[in-house]
Image 1: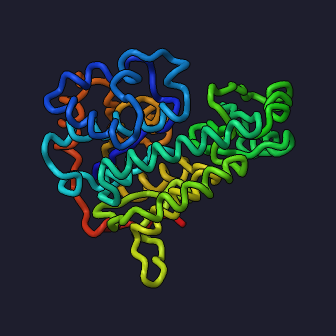
Image 2: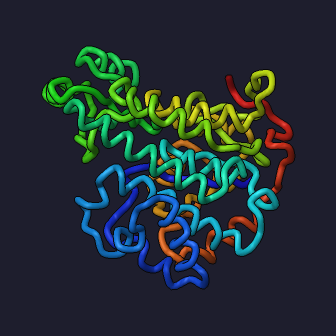
Length: 331
C-alpha cells in the first residue's frame, strides 16, 4: 500500500527548485502556479537566500508548488487516484495532500495557500511569538514543561519531537528550564503557528476557502487534526466530504498538527511504502523512526525519481472510494 507524504514549512532550502525546472513542462506548470499565488516562485526557488524564503508568505506557496511539481514527475503522466492509496501532509503540506487526493486542483491549492500564508504573516506581526522544537525527554514531562511555560504543543510529530509555540518569554523560560533529557531548539519561524495567536488568519481564510468548490477525495486523505481519514468523518447534511476538508484546513491554522496520529493511521492502514515529495527529508526522517517496515524515498531532486517510481510500482495497491479497504483508522 502506497502513501504520498507532503512536507510543511521549514523544509525549503535556497536553490532547491533549480533542478526541477529542467524537467519537460516544468516551466509552464510553475508559471501557472506563480500566477495563482502572486509570488515569483521561480526566483525564490532558485536565487533567493535563506532569509527570503523563510518568509511565511514566500515559503508556503513555494513548498506546495514544489511538491505538486514533484508529484507530477513521480506519477509520470498517471492520475494519483490510479496509483496512490493514501496521502497526508504536514501543516501547509495538507493543502498539497488535498490536491493529491483530488479535493482541489493544483491552482486552487496554491491560491488558497498563498492567501493562508499572507494572513498568517499578518497575524504573526500582531504580537511577537515563536516556536521551539523539544527533542527527546519523557513525553508526559515534555508536555508538562510546555504547559508550565505558558506555551502549547503546536506540532506533535512523534519520534520524540514536539514543537512548542507561544510568547517569546515563554519560549525563553522553556529553554532555560528544559525537560530532563530533552533539547529545546528555537525554530526560525515568524510566529506561533497553529495556536490562538493565528485566530485573525483563520477568520480571514474562511471566506476565501468558502468560495472554492471542492471535490470529495478520490483516495484516502488524512487530517492533521486527529489523523483520521476524511472519508470516515460524518459530513453535514447538504455538504460533502470535500467541504469538511476545507473547513478543517481553515481550522488547522489555529489547531495543533497531530502528525503522530497521522503516522499511527498509516501503520493501521497497512502502508508498506511512502514517498515524500519535494522539498523532502523531514517526514521520511520521522517515518524511519516511527513506521517500522515501511520502505521510504525522499524525493529531494529529480535524481530521486527513479527510486520513487520503483517504490510506487512495487507498493501501489490502490483502494477505492477514498476509504481504507481492510482496516479501520484509529479514533
